[in-house]
Image (cartoon, rainbow, N blue to C red; front, side, top):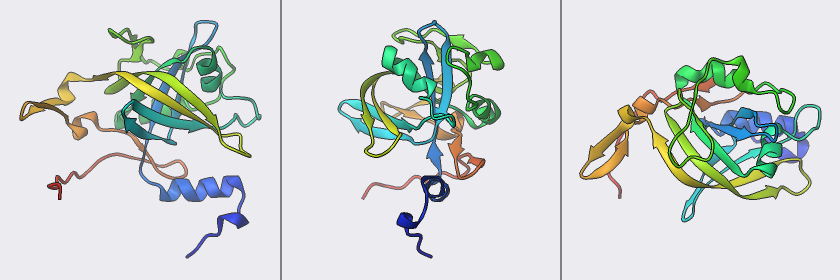
Length: 202
């Protein structure tokens, strides 16, 4: 079946894309507002871009009201942020932090999450998340004829929980099942890794 995107609204295209580009990793982004409160929000339009520089991207649109999202407002005043890869067991709390709150009101106040300071990190990380990146905005790109903004950020430091770090042939390797990343599907659906196959490179 063919779906001609020229015939559909942006909301309908989103519906089709998020049900077919699956699974998607989730960037759980901690930023700092000008009033010193922390904002925490998930984004599934997210992935790695390059390793030189070490760069990731995530994108975001506006709030339902049409106002700019708090994450973008925070990054425009402070380019440092902490990007987490949440585990499957954090699904409910990640979904809770997706709720829109007034700027300056922290999602963390509605959860039992713990923040910890990490050496080299500009902002704290969520202790319960298995992976955290210390990141800094490189560029904010506005898509033409759209409210969507793409955030390009450089990764400066990576923290991975000890239980997920292995040493194999003198090289660090991360145990994906130990990280147990939460992934996004379509509608209100989430998923996790269940099967892993290792193939030799051609």
